[in-house]
Each structure stands twice: as structure tokens, then as C-alpha cells.
Length: 304
Image 1: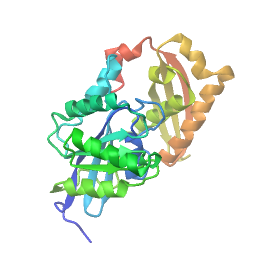
Image 2: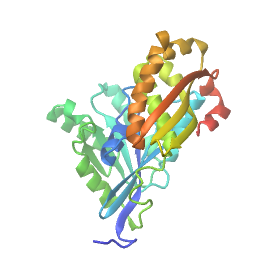
Image 3: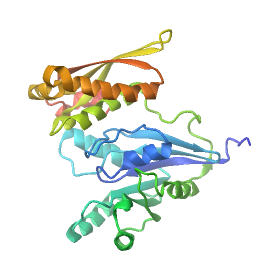
């Protein structure tokens, strides 16, 4: 059945909340593919990433945002600014919380104040998404839902387990019901507005997050230096630099005999080949840009 340009529920929905609440996992689940990188470490997402979900009578444009946290460093301040800016002009907001994290009673009142403060300027409906509910017993979950309902006038509260896709169908239905009728924002075959270069850089950065420890992930940026497609050979050759802040970090990322860098490259190449649907030759090297997380000019170069 053909739909007229005006007959779909379409709109923008921001996914916000503290770092590591599962925002990127939720967006990837709703999209049915991996657009946002996911690691167990907080503050993995740095830029706002858009994912487009299409149905017969709807198009939802999700904005996956960096985690809301008290920031001091220029990079972290930029991340929080990006997240807060995403709240203006959207049709709905999903505020996501990981309920498996132990939260003392004193902290809960503080969390309530934070939610009120962060949502103060928001005119659109706010849905509270309680993630990882599979790790709680029913009684504790009900107590928690009642507690959150008293903190803020949420439009609805949805318990989900984003990693397993539990509860997300009902959540999507609720979101669609809030969207105005109008044309689709994007063609139906475009799952994101992010460029392939951006997504490739993110996939490499994800592997650095997963395969290195301590402060390394937070000191890492990835720059794609060249991206060449050879259609005849169905091969994409990518040269990328892993940018670090200090010389002392270089040996950790390269590893003994180059082993760690090779591990990062192999893991990233598998994801990139799936993304591009083509064979990939990935060449990685490491360079140092002293204290880049505090260098506002370099942050602009990275797209902040």
C-alpha cells in the first residue's frame, strides 16, 4: 500500500541519561543494526549520532547522545553541551537509567534533582526507560517505578532489557503514538546521517576502548587519513591514525611487537567489512598530539 507523503508519524527523539545507561545499545536494538559503538566503559559516545527507524506508517529519528555527567575537561564539557542541545526541538525524550547499578537512598534524591534540572527546558513528553530490568526482582522494580514516578512527571515509564531487546517493541509503539503526522525526514534506506568515515573511525575507537585499560580509551581519538574504494577489486583501503595524548601511552596501544595494534586492527576490520559490505585493507598507526582533549582547535577538527 502506498503512503502519501503526509501520512506517516514522523519525528525526532533524543535518548539521554547518565553515562553507560545503555543508550547506544537501545538505539542499535531499535535500528536492528550497529550504528552506535558500545563498550562497558562510561562516556563511550562522544558525538550525537542519528539513527533512523522506519515502519509502514512511521519514521523515528533517534539521537543517541553522550552521557550527562558533571564535566570539567573541555572534551567532556563539549559532550554534555551536545547532549543538552539535542533536547531542544525534539518530539519526545527518552531518559534512560541503568537500574542494575546500586543507588543509595541519599543518591536517589540527588538523582531526582538532576533529572528535574536537566529536563527543565524540555517541552516535549519525557519517557523514563529503566534498563537492565532483567537483573531485578519484580517487587524491587515496582518500588523503583513508584519512586521515579514521584520524582518527575514522566509521560510514561518503560522497563526494558535493551541488550536482549525485551520491552523495546512496546516502547517503540508508545514513541510512535507521540509523533505528529508528516513526511519522512530521510529516504527509507538511510539508517543514519553519519558518514561512512565517521562510522569507521568510531568502530576503531570502540576496539581501543575494549582492548586497552586505564586512561587510554579517554585519551584516544581516531582520524581517517585516507579512504579509497577500488570497485573493480571490491576492496576499500583505509589509513587511520590513533591519536593519543602522551608518549607513554604509545607503547601500550602498539603492544609488544605490535601485537595490541594488530589485535585492534583485526577486530575493527571485521566490523568495518560488515558495515561497508566489502573487503577492507585497514592500516593503523599511532601518533601523539599532546593533551588533545584540552585543545579546542583539535576538538573542532574532530567535529565537536
